[in-house]
Length: 244
Image (tube, rainbow, N blue to C red; front, top):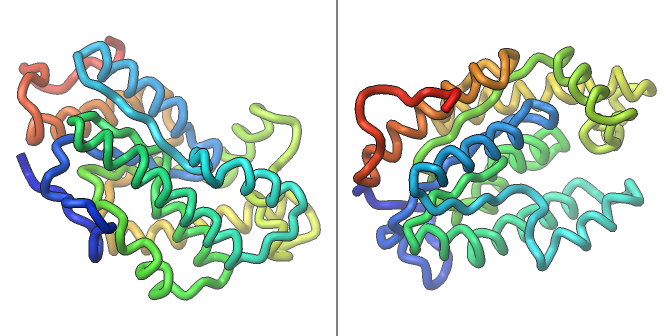
């Protein structure tokens, strides 16, 4: 079993080397299909006897309700929003992620610090400051980024809801008068930052323009390989069947 580590100094009271579980991160922009893939992975893992904990952005009981209310007014400064999200992340790290890993759970993260860093970078945050801000984050056992074209993201977003989101369209940045045009420009900028983060942090990129089943097969194969290194009892005989 390989030991865990943090990107920098670990949080007070946390010994990363004593965490027995697995931290699997699925990254990608809104409408990339992350949540669907995470849900399928969770069900699949639980059917195979793994205890699963799911985390994601704005799921802290301490911060999430306040952050939702603050974003409704569309007046948050970039730095304030970044600190809100960092607080949300660290509250979940302390109260959900670390305890679950201590108990040997598979923690599935629907986005992690990389999305937070990408959003903040596009809004002008200093990359070095962001690295310091998130330096206590645990290094995941696997990170997969679902890369989806901007055009496909717009199509999926409008199918899911009638209008575009103010923040996910980058309207606070004054990129364009049209929400559609702003969305496309913003998502392209986010994608460029993700590419830089991928080179720095070495996470895997998966083509997210394909069917749900095809993407799930890829994710299960990757997760199976990670868990084989961490746990005993994973199914033998090659890659998993994504339809199972």
